[in-house]
Image (cartoon, rainbow, N blue to C red; front, side):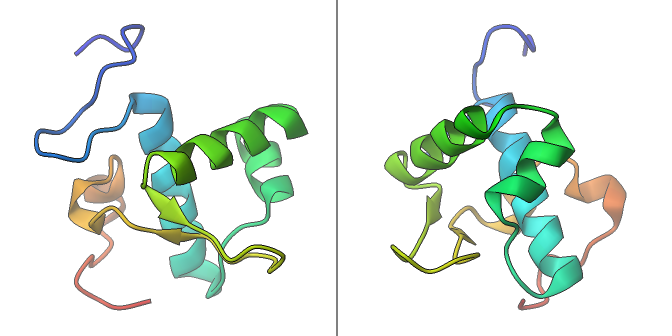
Length: 100
């Protein structure tokens, strides 16, 4: 599908845009590598966007049921999308069956 369309990249009941998928994959990979979820500042640096942009994305992911967070707890993001449905993980060769 077109990158500009903002349409989902997977079939099934839970859908997300390409941009949301990139954030979800980053959160998953970061947590896999470092044993904790990224801070919003980590996402800001990675995606080269402003703090409000990252915060709005996080709020949107949570609103859409793609992540969960614990209010007032730093680095508490949990990805609710099955790892095998996330983009870019195939070429990273991450074993999605391994628990974090």
